[in-house]
Image 1 (cartoon, chains in turn blue, cyan):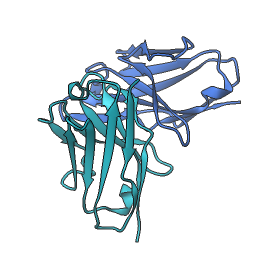
Image 2 (cartoon, chains in turn purple, red):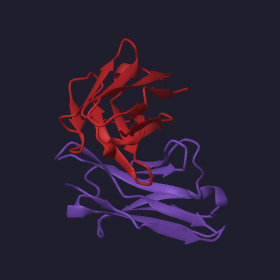
Image 3 (cartoon, chains in turn cyan, green):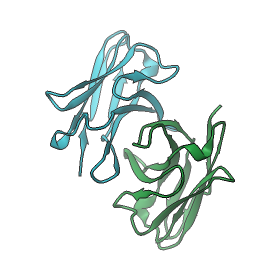
Image 4 (cartoon, helix red, strand yellow):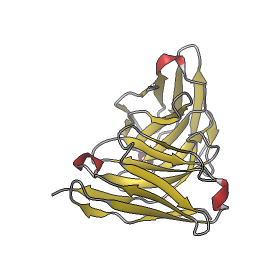
Amino acid sequence: NFMLTQPHSVSESPGGTVTISCTGSSGRIGATSVQWYQKRPGSAPTTVIHDDDQRASGVPDRFSGSIDYSSNSASLTISGLKTEDEADYYCQSYDTYNSYVVFGGGTKLTVL
Amino acid sequence: QVQLVESGGGVAQPGRSLRLSCVASGFTFRSYGLHWVRQAPGKGLEWVALLSSDGSEEFYADSVKGRFTISRDNSKKTLYVQMNSLRPEDTAVYYCARDRDGYGNFDYWGQGTLVTVSS
């Protein structure tokens, strides 16, 4: 099955910039869109990026998404980090061969 | 505004059943595919099941295939999941989510309902 791999954790200082990677197996990044979700403890997930690079409604432009087909990976970049950005971030895509939704393992962002 | 409200969670013994519901409002329910996604304690998000907008196509994660059944009642604007033969590893918060385009592109999520499977 198609898999998405994320780093377990990243950290950066307030005001800094961080990039979270999401690498697809079997060269399938880009076959369907990639989404990014923010998940805080005790809260429901919220959509940050959809369709590879489109910010969801209400998401500040400090958040951006991109796809690098050469490295078979997607990235979420957050600039001007704020302590409120601390959360787990999940990439997600769709395995069209198996009709299967795939999540990455999640990346814990610490802003300190 | 779009709202998804789950209910039906609780404690169940291994091998027993539970049915979760997700009531929708604020959008044309019959026009969207819907999913169940779960998060076990200390774990990541795991997709559970998808049901197409007209209910004609359903897909499941391998971990629940043959035990869980997703369904919907468009007249009641409600999504369901019937969970049978529950296992301790099914313990999780279960979220329903709306699909923007039919390919797991989630745009709205419910607040979740907790299912605990324990003897």
